[in-house]
Amino acid sequence: MKQSISVIGLGYVGLPLALTFSQNGYRVVGIDVDIQKIRLIMSGKSYLTDINDNTIKSEADSGRFTATDDYSAIAETDVIIICVPTPLDEQHAPDLSYLVNAGTMIKQHIRSGHLIILESSTYPGTTKEVLKPLFDQEGLEAGKDYYLGYSPERIDPGNRQYSFKEIPKIISGVTEACAQKIYELYKTIFDHVVPVSSSEVAELAKLLENSYRFVNISFINEFAILCDQLKIDVWEVIEAAGTKPYGFSKFFPGPGVGGHCIPVDPLYLQWKAKKIGSGSVFIEASAAVNNRMPAYIVSQVKAHLPASLSKDARILVVGAAYKNDIHDVRESASLALMKLLSQEGFRLNYHDPYVTQITLDGFKYRSVDLTEEYLQNTDCVIIATGHSQLPIESIINHATFVFDTRNLTKGLSGKAKIIRLGGGS
Ligand SMILES: NC(=O)c1ccc[n+]([C@@H]2O[C@H](COP(=O)([O-])OP(=O)(O)OC[C@H]3O[C@@H](n4cnc5c(N)ncnc54)[C@H](O)[C@@H]3O)[C@@H](O)[C@H]2O)c1
Image 1 (cartoon, protein in one colour):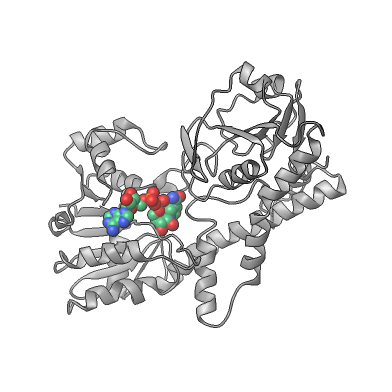
Image 2: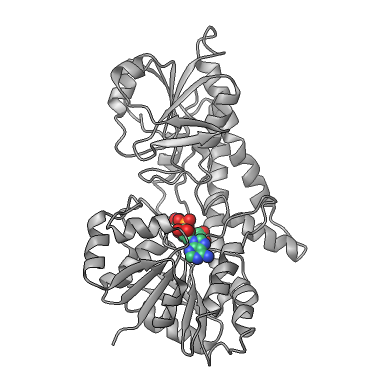
């Protein structure tokens, strides 16, 4: 008989993982402290753009998938997968309070033979130094009484190119026996399982992947500014360089980085590096470059607005989510851009097909409709997120000035004056 699974934390990572196990015939209990999410799931409603209501309904109707806020449910399952948030605290240090809370609840219901897998992104050493001691306190031995390991989640919300099971899955255990148990389970779900020699390697691999993106995005952002100064189009340069079949990967400029991973994970690495008396100059420099992108965009918008308008122009920011085709606004660079525009005194509004409402500096904004009339009455439209369903033709034909940070207007022309970030104008 197949093992039964508890998934702790039903967010962007946990809910798709729980449903994937359920779709593969496992009995799954999702556990979350957010009672609102439990209610939505139990009424067959999805709160993620990548998951439709029918998927939740059919797994719940099959009797395999259920959700609760009651941790005692884990005693009835064989495997516990932890997908809780790992954000930064106010000092920009790792905030593992969600993980410690989850581990503390798990240890109250742990039983012999339980397999516990951490999926949340974190610094090397967390599984052994933070999670394992919680179970050690109960007098339990990993690899004998229970099994513990780390497997970083690599889901990319909004990405339709790779299905969940096609993304190779790194796995590790705190002992050989632990790694073996995870391997046997995950090979039934994922096409490629990649075992590594320790939980620290798996933890650090995840931080390397996201720090690599962080550093490269910051470099291309700095490069875009340089291209503006050189009066050369960065987008054409990237396309040209991208024809090299080896040794070059394309990254694209924008208002900065966002989400729960790219702006956060490198700081977990930096924190760990500083703990051992070291540090990464690349991470420090990258954070500085990315953080100044909103100010650069505002300065460019001001430079291209008619002088009579620059003080209190009506600006519409298109896109609040941190990346295309999702509704996640966590750490979104669009929000940083909007805050700055509002602080500068511009009359600000936004449109996002996925985000109906945001709060900035205590003020609530509702997404406005992109009607012809609205576009005509706006002095500048800033495209901040490259959602694929945006009506670009209508924007460039009805607005007067479009500042495009995502190259969505590539090859297009219309009534509007169009300036692209890094476009060399
Ligand atoms: N979002 C992504 O694209 C992505 C990709 C790869 C890895 N990750 C990592 O996965 C982890 C989870 O990220 P996410 O985006 O799914 O976060 P999320 O905020 O969308 O979901 C986390 C869920 O955990 C719940 N939760 C918090 N504390 C809990 C507790 N003690 N017990 C039970 N539930 C609890 C929250 O209510 C929430 O529903 C993070 O470490 C993140 O860095 C995220």
